[in-house]
Length: 217
Image (tube, rainbow, N blue to C red):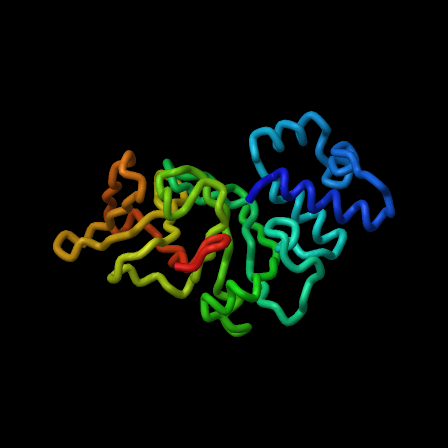
């Protein structure tokens, strides 16, 4: 995702809605309830204010999928809708703290839902969270949205999972269960990060990562 592209889609929407030749960044900031200097900083740092954008989409009744990825302007009742925990950050680096776990519903792109093999019956088990950090690069990059199947918590078969740890917060890591010691290993794709080894009672498996924005596992 790119903040500049997101702003251009919002600009395009507001131009059409208000029948204006041009919409300035300050106009976008007013609709997102973001001060001009803050918006400029977000744009420069390619930092996406997810909650502000979600609030804007809900108010305007337009698809978050379109604002973030450029697909499907209007909401579609037939599409899968999953829980998006916009305020939850799963770290691909050193752990993340999350004090607000409220969620909003977002639509899943039909191509992604087909690739994942998901049906309407599955949507209540799928959650989306933001990923920060580079320890899972190049498999999962900083700023990606990860799709989690909360039914898949059996780690006897290694894979990439969202896990909550007692002391370090929420992680996205490759999880391996040691068959001898029964300890749980959290492994990064980035070779510069060390493996984390924990006791089973120190880890809660949230679910398996089945895909990220733009990619299926």
